[in-house]
Length: 219
Image 1 (cartoon, helix red, strand yellow):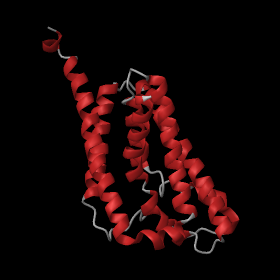
Image 2 (cartoon, one colour):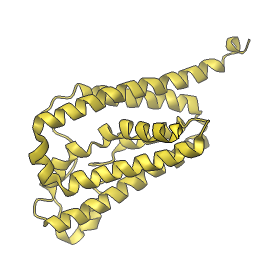
Image 3 (cartoon, one colour):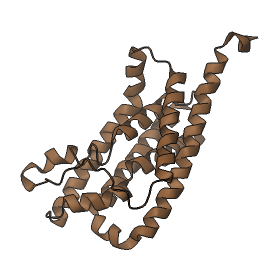
Image 4 (cartoon, one colour):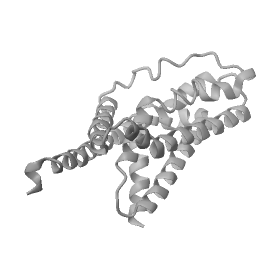
């Protein structure tokens, strides 16, 4: 069961700070200010499903797309690990008053509820290019041993991410009152530091594999 638990922890630790449902909840609340509580919950459920499909597709299919273009897995690990680590570093040093997701427009209305559920509320508010690239990188970094348990664990991890999106968005009005600015800052700082460490580990895995292909290391 260790690969299963490890996969869940890795997925949640790497993706949660980037998906950032806690940080997105206040923005979601402001974009859906005119919705009733039931409509907000319905919209949150659709966003969570969309987010899950985007992430799981990137995780399982992304590496095959890269292979089609002739990009090796170790190179993906090094490049993707740099993205993961830089994203964590950026979040770690981000000012608390930085505006999040400035490209989201405030034009949601009731007539196109589920159209807006995908854009801009799922993409890019919830799952952006950073989240997608990290999911691809984690898929490329899938371990060889216990792969079935790892894959199941990854799916469970994605479900937990989607569930956190639903809970944070559906109850965003309550979350804003409970956490406060200080609580949200503490959660994100800890998650961001862990993300930097995960990114470095992925880089090391890819770099080690690349070193193994050099002739000097075959002796």
